[in-house]
Image 1 (cartoon, each protein chain N blue to C red):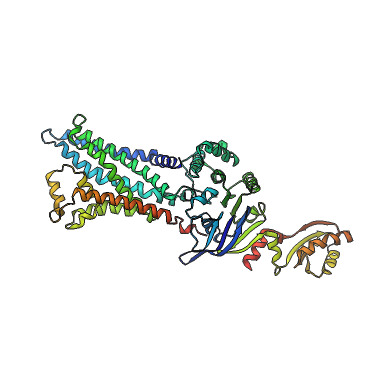
Image 2: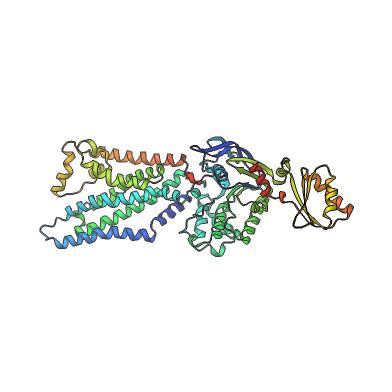
Amino acid sequence: MSDIYLFRTALRDLIRPGKLFAFAILVALPFLVCTIVKWKTSPEEYAATTYYGIWIAMYVYGFVLTMTSVIFSSGIIAQEVEQKTIVYLLTRPLPRWRILLMKYLASILITTVVCWLTTLAIALATVGPTHLGAAPLAHDILFMPIGVSVYSALFLLMGTLLNRPLILGLIFAFGWEYLIVVLPGYGQYCAIVTYLRVLSPHEMPAWMNKWALLSASIVEPPTRMLSWIVVLTLLIVTLGASFVIFSTREYVPREEAG
Amino acid sequence: MIVLERASRWYGQVLGLNDVSCTIPAGITALLGENGAGKSTMIKVMTGQLKPSAGRVLVQGELPFANPRVFRKLGYCPEIENNYDQMTGQEFVTLMAHLAGLPSSTLKARVAESIETVGMTSAAGRKIGGYSKGMRQRIKVAQGIVHDPDVLVLDEPLNGLDPLGRRDISTLLHDLAGRGKCIVISSHILYEVEQLTRNMLLMAKGRLMAQGDIYQIRNLIDSHPHHITITTDQARSLAKHLLDLPYILSAKFNAQDSRLLEVETHAPDQFYAQFPNIVLEHGYNITHFDSPDNNLEAVFKYLVSG
C-alpha cells in the first residue's frame, strides 16, 4: 500500500502544470512541423513513412526519449537531496530500494506516455489517420518502454552516484551517444542508441543511411540477438546497481553536518 | 532507548562527532550545544542517516542505518525548513503515514489525530508552501508522531514557534514522555529546553561535555564558585554572618545598590540548607534571592570555556 501511495505521489509530482506545458510543446512541435512539410511538399514527392522514420529516430528516440529520461530519472534522488526532503524518505521503514523502484516506475511511465503521444502525433501528421498501418507505429509503441527503461535506469544510476547528475547525463545523451556512433571502428558498440536502432529500425532516406554507415562500413552493426542481450543486461545491471548503491550510501550533504 | 558506544563520525579531515558514549533513556532528553557543536551529526547518526566512522549506535537495540525495523519505532522531525511545498499539510502527513507502514484501517484516523495534536486541523488543507515557519514546525512534528513511535528525535523543533506553539509542543512532548517514549530534542537556545527537561546532553566541538541532570552537573563543577545574589535592607549584617560560614568564599556589595549582596560559595547545597536558618534566626527581610549560576546558560558557559 505504501509503495502504491509513493508511486502515485511521484507520478503527481511529475505531471505538475509547468511540466505538462513542456510536454505539450514536445508533442505539438513535430505535429506542426510535419503538417507544414506535408502541406508544402507535392504528394508525388512526399514519402510519408520515410518522414515518419526520420522523426521517430531523430526526434523521439534521439531527443524526447533521452531528454525526458535524463531530466526525470537523474533527478529522482538529486532533487530530494537538493531540497533536503530526502531525510523524510530515508527515515521511514520502507526499504530504500522500494522507494527508488516506485519513483523509477513513475518516471518511466510518464516518459513513455510522452514518447507515445509524440509518436502518435508524428504518425498522424506524416502518414495520416487513415494510413497509420503503413508506419511501424505498433512496433514503436511496444518497443518504446524498453528504450525508456534502459536510458532511465542508466540515468538513475548516475543520480544515485553523483550529486549533480544532470550535466553528466546530458553530456552522455547528446554528446557521447551522438558522437560515438559516427566514429569509425567499434565505437558504435558503446552507444545505447546503436542497439535501439537495430531493435527498432526505421525507414531513412538514402543520404542519411550513407552518413550513418560511416562506421558500419568498417564494422558490422550488432545483430538483433546481441542488441537484445546488451539492452536487457544494461537494464538489469544499472537498475540493480542503483538499488544497491541507494540502499548503502549516505545521502546527507556535508554542509549539513554540525 | 538510544545507546552510543564510543561513536565517532568524521567527514574527511573534519570531526563531526568525537568518541561519544551515552545512554538516552525514556523521557525527554535535551541535546544542547552551539552551532557546529556536533548536535546535527549526532542526530543523523541516531536516526540512521549517517553511519558512525567508529564505534556504534543502537536504537532500541538495533543499528539504525537503513534499518526498516528501527524506523518503525522511530519518529524524526528534521531541522530543515524544506518540506514538500506543493503538498497540503494533510497530504504530507498522509504520505509519511503511508511510508511508515500504517495499515489503511487506522491511517486516516491517525493522520487526523496527529494533525489535531499539533493544532493544525484548520490549516491542513492548505499547501505547505504557504505555511509560516511555525506552521511548518507543527506539521513536521505531526509527521514525526503519526506512527506513534517509541523513540522521537526532534532537531530544533521550537525554532520559529510563537509562545503558544512552544507551549503546545512542550505539552505534547511531556504527554509522550509520560507514556514512556524516549524523546531527544536538540536546541542551541538554552532557556527553551531548560523549561522542558532537566536531563541533558551537552555537546561542544563534537564531544559530549556532560550528561545527566542539569543541577547535578552544576554541582559537580566545584572548581567554579557558585554565585548567589541577595537583596535585603540589612546587607552588611547579613554579609558578616555569611562570611563566618566556612564554605563562603566572598561577599561583595553592589556599587549601585547597597542592598544587593553577591555571595560566592563552593558548596551551594550546604549554603541553601543553612541560609533559611540564618535568615530566621536574625530576622532578615529578604526581598530578592537568585542564583545566576542555577540556569543552563551558566552551566554551559562553565563547561565549554573550562
